[in-house]
Length: 440
Image 1 (cartoon, rainbow, N blue to C red):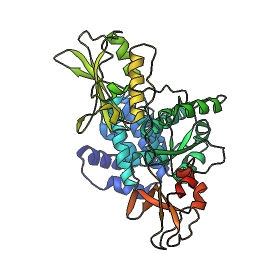
Image 2: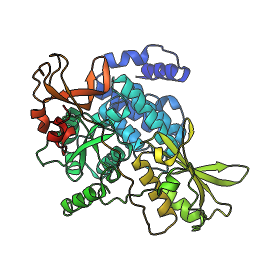
Image 3: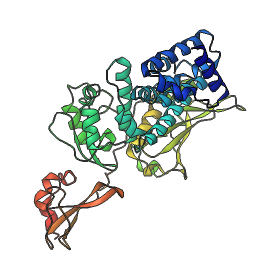
Image 4: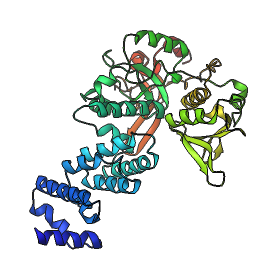
């Protein structure tokens, strides 16, 4: 054992591949190495966190006990040490290690820098696992057992799905949500949406018998007509929801202001600097500090629906928000080009920070749904996506946009449907098919 320790110290201290670390997994059982690395990490801690090589055995040799050691300390360590701990979890690479990173990423909002590092680590792991992105990784990696912290993390994840518009395939939804005993009790309380890209095709809840065939996400009430939200609130009246969804306030901008690039009407609603700062801290805004000004000169927050940041600047007395802009890589955005969820969540934050009851403008007229193509088939090569049978040449067919996944293409494309099969296409729900056929 002294020889092994000397070899490990030499290899880890000098960052030279001497072969000791590479040989140990072939010589000792995984569980034994896990206990060995944990003992070294505990010794490192007892010695006042000196001799870092003891700590650095966690990644290459550690297992589930080392994952627990690291995860219990990620929030309490310094930022630098926490980043090193994240690196060790990435190297361990088990689902338990990855979920520890997910828990940090979705956790305490005051730990912004290390949460950013955690998200970066998830991006790396997603690539290693050949997944589309970290959102797909978070869908696929979940706890096997529940507790209070696990439930809290899953609630944050579900809210993230709603705010970001992140989607999962119908198959992933069935496997990782409906088939997950930890997630399904929360999922049963929510309203879900079957989607084509950013467009909501229909809503459903678990247990109503509907089986989605396209991508699935958690719908935000701003994406629904007000009368539909009212109806759904009544339907869910006896169901305490896992997150604030249907009872979530929805806000709209009146048209004159919606056509601008800056909101200034909060400037006269003075409530005091600390009242604003308290609300913004709670809602995930980051303070923008200027050393020359000796304090906070503004706040920023990421709004994922538009991949953009909102910047809020206080007025001259620091008692209210004098100006708000939303910017992406091209500069400030006109507000009526932003997603309705971005507008609603931004205004909710600002109204809450200024401590006033809300008077909302009526929602703008909803954008028209993409048109349904009605034509006669030009050949006999197309197939109906509902019944999968060929559509004969010169037969009337209906075309709708749908997410298509093939080895060479993923995105929105036109698919074809027999008029008699229209009931099996969610895109055609509520559409007068007879009126459409009069065009042919």
